[in-house]
Length: 282
Image (cartoon, rainbow, N blue to C red; front, top):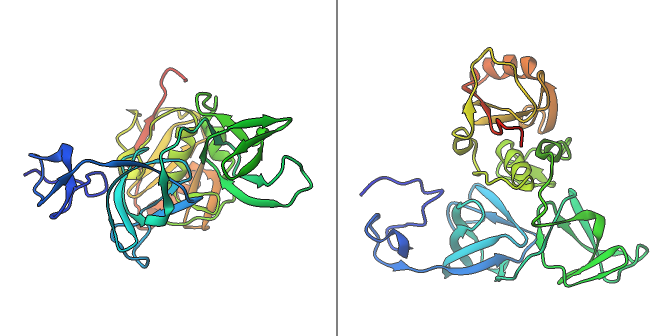
């Protein structure tokens, strides 16, 4: 049997996805149960252990293919980017039909469609919601009312995905984080690209295969990606980039030349690839 990437392949020695039968070895093969993330954010880990490293986070409303429930843990695969892992079973709910997503770093949720009511919750960026009613400037969701200006229809992608990344300026760096409470370098790319209507893998090594490779002396444009070993940044223009960096533990804008010199002097080494994702300028 061929080797597989455990991050993207729902297969273990004892259990695997039915569609992988004949491709991987496992004692049992099962079909998935389509679920949805019901928690505001759900940690996805490589093993059922709350002390295990955070691989990524799944956000409210995102689809999830469930293969196993056991001891309070759910094992399965994200329906958005294919990431496989374990999350708390209580973070899952039945699959609904989202209509909108949160476009601001956070969206306040109110018990009533009125500004002076205290918020009862806060949806994270990218949360996918079912809007069931509209009243004045508020949209009613299963958890409460949200200001309409903080939502975007799912079928209306952002025109400038790089501007989405800029909204995260100053957000704390967290390994595996995927929200305004903490984000890593590849999640910044993924969330921004997804908001722009583009599919995007989760980790920087997966993203490093995207787009067309640019020559080292090619003029850079807004939206080009710069890859190091284990790190990625987004160009804002020909000279500046935005990235979530552990150097300052936040999302930072700096000159590419400055970042490249510092990163090369440390463990990531020299730039490995420059990529243009949207040659036509979409």
